[in-house]
Image (cartoon, rainbow, N blue to C red; front, side, top):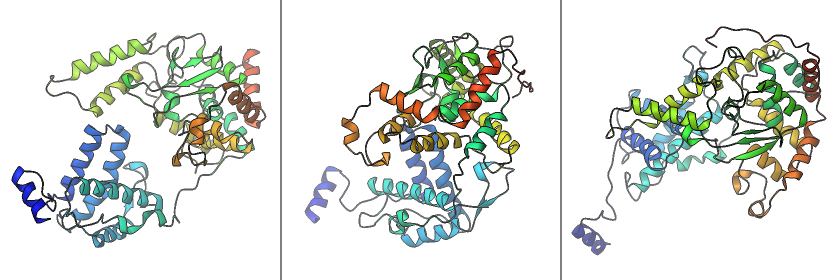
Length: 420
């Protein structure tokens, strides 16, 4: 060992037992920069990591002083857990929300993020080579989850009441979410003619990196459409062939978005133009966060709906049917997956329709490498999906809605202020 260290010192290489201690604050910044610049993790992932580890920074700022990575031990990690169980936070980070204690899943995620950050510290020699990850001894996987937000599914009657409570603008949006299982962000980033093929009865969920948006798991997929949903989308589009599939409430045929008529290539060019105008110079390029903000502005000018707007509309509907505790539109994705399970849809098909990994431990279906070698014929996927969806009570509401529109007795969509 001594000879090895002497040789490393002679050539200027890091010695076997050398390390560079840094403060926890500096470690956090280097770790986030690693995800931002090297791994190119999504902006949402980097923001979640930043928010989670901010609790650790506050833990030391509350009278505990600055601690370096060389002195951070398991006892500090355990004290941090006790600190987390004693603080209160605002749900979703809303400043005006009533504060509540952290739920067990939230605490577990914060600790997992901190464990990952200290694993990075060990790999980058910011901790003594003879030390262990201070969060590894907590055995986070065995931590009991007693206090968490339960997922409450709608009953068939509640599904029907939910759709019947929708107005003209809300109905196509939430019916599409309910019968395709799309994430709300995927629905708001659908473009014509790129992502919709009504002749073949398909919706394509695609990554759009040049438009500043990617699928959460990066897994692109095609979702078959049942016939009533195809008719529903035809009515929604009203002959349009460009722009987002679903427009904000304020827009109609006589009041179109600022970037009306734009297709994907035109929107990409508009984003590039705005980035060039906003960029200070070639030596100081815009950050990914700044470029994402520009992309969101172009999407908004093209008439796309904000995901937060879907959430507020969903909350107003659940309040109307007496279920104010349901506040997340992603519940409809849970409804879709549960419907497929109830109909005994093949697990691999369920994975593909939901856009999850087809193989490996994350799939949760036990296929492993079999999932890699198994390829689903599209006709099988469509047959099982139609078998699962067409018999639902909520689908009868969609069919009845379509019949009233064909008979020309549709009620006008409610008008809301332009700011919406």
